[in-house]
Image (cartoon, rainbow, N blue to C red):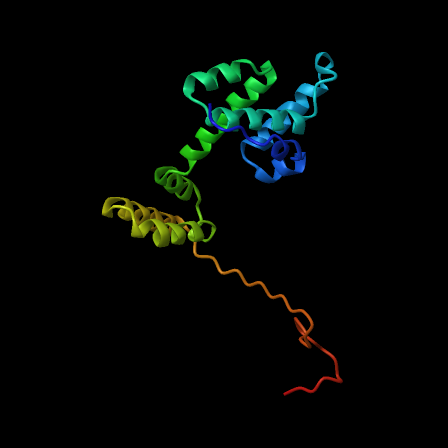
Amino acid sequence: MAKKLCREKYTIRTLAFYQEQGGVFNDLITYLTKLRLQPKNRGMAAPATLLNEACYALDNSKLMSEEEAAKYIAEQPEIVRELIHRMEEGQKQQQAAMTLHAIIDYILQHKQYQFVNQIINMLKDLVGRTCSDEEYQQILAAEQAVMDNSKIEVVNKNEMHHCNVFPGLVQNPQFPKK
């Protein structure tokens, strides 16, 4: 059997820690909170405590062989098993969402170039060095498609702070006219 994890690292985690992690943890917090509000689940442990247990069990099972991990998870309470399953599914969904094609689809869904130009530039800078020519052409095609769909729009945003500027027309006889 592999070495054991330190349980203290998990017991000190708070709800704020999981909210900061985001992703699947926010969904799980919402799910656990709704479960706790049901009369039949009164006395259920706090969401942070359940998430601590599930994270510990999941991380601990990753250190074991497949058979040991299955047996270990089967020994956990039903709610912890369900949380482990949901965390694994959420991680798979996050990994699938970060594929090149998923990012390009996200870019193409937006109508304005200004909303996705940073993503496009990141792809061209980071992925452009390691991807194939075909994938790079897909990035360029997505950029061109979004640029073609974008309306040309001038946004004039005049914000002046801590200066001696008079916005608009000033009509006062004390101001010199030139």
